[in-house]
Image (cartoon, rainbow, N blue to C red; front, side, top):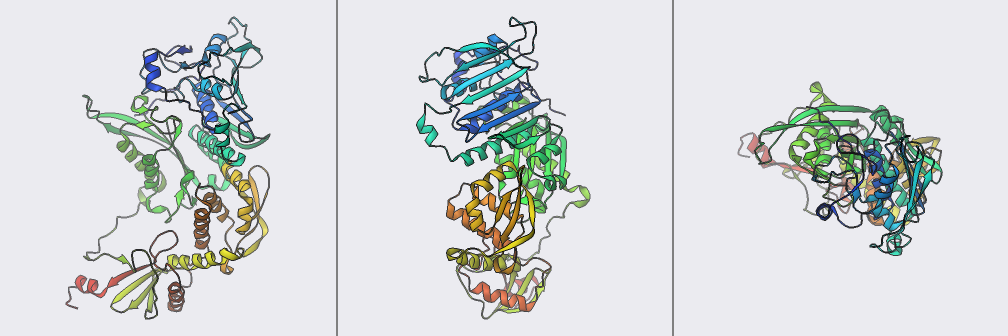
Length: 589
């Protein structure tokens, strides 16, 4: 079954269904949906206005931001505009075209159904709405309308509107100026200009990938930082990321029927779930989960269950500790979604969440692997004693002076005899631990050694990554990354960290940006970054791992403060007691 998606109009109407008129909500509905002011930072303004543009059926949305967004935000669309009467009413509190007078707010199909977005913005900023519904037969003779209001100094004041004629083609342009000028505490609580714009950039990228048939453009201080053509998810991926990521990805578009049971007499009924989007191959990963984007009916949301389903669809194809790059939209019937569970609408109440997540996991797995590439399930060893990490629970220090390497397995694992135990060393994880502790000690007092990249590598960054690179330029330089802007979100990488004489790949810059942008304390972000840097020069499957290399690795591992876990938390050494072998072979020892 294919789910039909219904999109209500922005504050200027709805495509089909109820009439395209703005109306005041009745007090009972206001009590159900009102949750206080929704404008907490500039990104929320952008989200509300983009929601309205999408609901109005826009095929193109242009977002312009000055500075951190408090000076000016401009959002223009080519969707259904408003006539003069609706434009006047749309900036009032609790007025909307997105909800019928007797409708239940749960299950409404629009993105921004709350209906008080423009009023909430006018409470905190000077709001200018220029709109035209394109109807040449109206009273204004086809001339558009400009409405100016705010900022409201008194939340209960009925401010006088400034309403006049305006030249504007069909659609709506909203300009927001002097955000939080009457709320100094709110303005002071914002992060720096670069961080606030990075939030906006990430948000617009989320919307562009969730709505790939709509063209998006984002401009910051006069420069275009993101642009998508509205011609499908692959082109949207290219606009948000780069050519390499796009070329190593696949589109997903599939439908599934899931059983629902509301306990209201419709047990056993099926609903259709559509899953669409783009999945980067498992060879394209990131250190953080920021690039795993999910949306519901075109609305970007934070939903751990759906994100986990996408991740589970990748299964064992993902390297340990890595996150996929994916954008997945899940379309379900609107009546199965409650969009009013979060004031900022970044979370939704999804009925049938477990069944929908199962469908998403299955669709993603099918798209990535195909029947002939599926991995076989693990085979039980039939040994009663499981492998356990060596050492104390806290990973405390120990030595391996009496351990004797006896061989290797699968070009990655060292086999070591130690008393009455067989130790299995994960050479990569162990080398990571050694490298991390060396790098951490060196970084404490001295700069990280660097190596010039010749010729300089060109790296295409997403808009969010580019903003982070600018915000953290000094820290990146301290860590060995010398970069320079190259236009259009592209940077040239002139030098990279070269710890222990092993040069990091320029792509490591992405992981550095993810670590520094993750909102952790500076110390935690630095340690996470060092852990990622330690990974790149570490031994990998296929390197020359013989008994002498394992001996050297054991000696260095024994010098570590926490030798039994890699910096990402995975064990470095497992042990198999002699008794385990005896039991498995039915021996008495």
